[in-house]
Every structure is written in C-alpha cells, then in structure tokens.
Length: 114
Image (tube, rainbow, N blue to C red; front, side, top):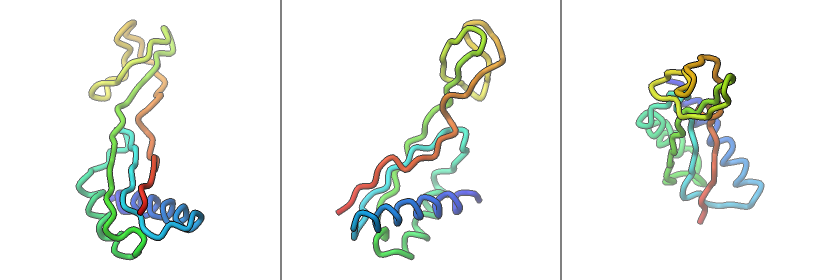
C-alpha cells in the first residue's frame, strides 16, 4: 500500500508549512493527483485518518483529492489530447510517440486553516 507513504509525505509538507507560518490548526488539505499515480482514494483516506491522529494540528482535518486526467501531446503533429483508457495513440494522426503532459502529479494545492 503506497498510500501510507504518500500520506506521510503530504503530512511532512503540511506540518512544515504550518510551522513556518505559525498555523495552529489545519481544517482541510487539498491535493491534486494525476490518474497515473493509481491512488486508491479509500486507502488514501484510511491512511490519512490514521496519521492525522498523531498531530493535533492536523487531527480532524479533511483530505480532498482532485484526480487529474492523463493528457498527452503527439510528437508528430503536436496535437494535445486527453488519454483515454491509457491508450497512448494520437487521435489525429495515430502516431504512438506521445509526451505525457499531465497525469503523474501529486501536489498539495492548498491548505485551509482555522
């Protein structure tokens, strides 16, 4: 379950940010996760609930996950498109040499505080 490691990294970022900014209580953590990260939201939430009990700053906070679709750009015709079902073929020219533009991210987009 790689979600526990991901949540630990998220906590490290949030707690460091809270310390640097004098934040006493985090209400919500918003993250953006690319579809190719293969995150199971239920497992991420489960791990979040376990780890949040270890810090009064984060305990009781909400975790919100925005899943970002996979987007690609054809190296042949430069067409940008959303990749469906991990089918990395340009819908315009059917070329298979594709740059992934989006879909591997894992970002803390913002933190809502009291």
